[in-house]
Length: 494
Image (cartoon, rainbow, N blue to C red):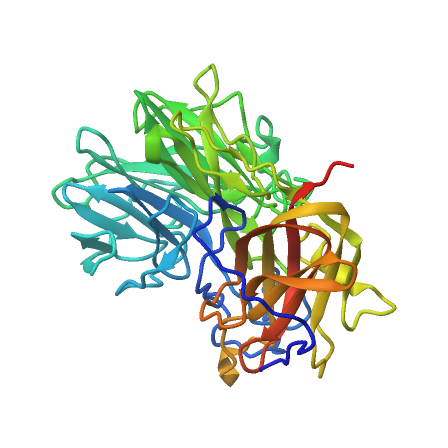
């Protein structure tokens, strides 16, 4: 579908340079269609899947359960549903590098062990490659334990210790918990010892584990998403619970002095839980040592409109407190700067400027549904009316402000691979009202070749009272919904 822009608007192409900040959800290109709906036509019966949030099926896009690797000055990101993405600038921008094995199962894990990279996912074979980007060769399945109570190979994590030993952590079930088993370094498909439970379901002492937006179900947790990181001589085993479809989805942590345990729960638990705001359901991810000896959390973000598995990805710095316990200070949703020489990241100081009650689309009146693009939620959206030749979304700023950046979270309304309606670039301009009724282009993506479901861009510092999104094009058959249009910057002092 090609949409006509406003020809009467003066256009001066705004130049773009490499950003100095990043913002969650991460602007990762080429989000894949959800793993479970690629062959499901829109409007069909849900088949009893209780994670559907609408009465009929609807295709959606999905990335989740990120596993990250900092290797030779680059981030390598391996999320569920497709592999892989690389950042050469510490997470400011990402590029898709498709692997020869791209969707091996949910919750992939990659570890560098004895000169090669091992890849494993839920219920998948084990793969190996001399490079983090492959090609990966199939080695075969890991021999699972026969111990009573051990779950199937869901949400696996491979951990290589400093001494060359290799370990498997896994578990994705309502109550079975997280398990650990040593693997043979010579043949990592084979156990090198018995399997033991590392983390139990503990609703009494860890009530945040219980499923539900109110953590109300004491009989179920979905303990899953294990990840091991070693800092100094201490081992930190993180996990997630409360259900990925819920805004209360969170990460917790147990400690040990040995990779096999025994493990004890931190006093500081959960280590990341964000039930309100734009970025919620912050669970199932990884904690990884990154540049300048910093620790980073990559995690899942809830974005469920059609289905509970409709998710995005975020990243933030992790830290150790004075007692040596692991935590993530917050899941940020405003622009952040990279760590300084001391390894500490910080906010850019740019805050949301939108007056959400006065955000209006070109076809809103009198319902003002444009506010759904500025209501601090990924689960509501604005879209132009059918046949609207000039889709525009205008947001009033809280006061005269200096605009520094914008974030757009798109929604592919009508996406349906079974009918050949596929994702692709959204094309647009962002314009600022620099004087009454005079609009200046501050961001021009009218020729964008990039498929970005989340698009975060810095702009030239511009004083404005209103900002508008002019939608110029969308993939054929797709109506461009806007789940979030946030303008960032600073309010001018009077």
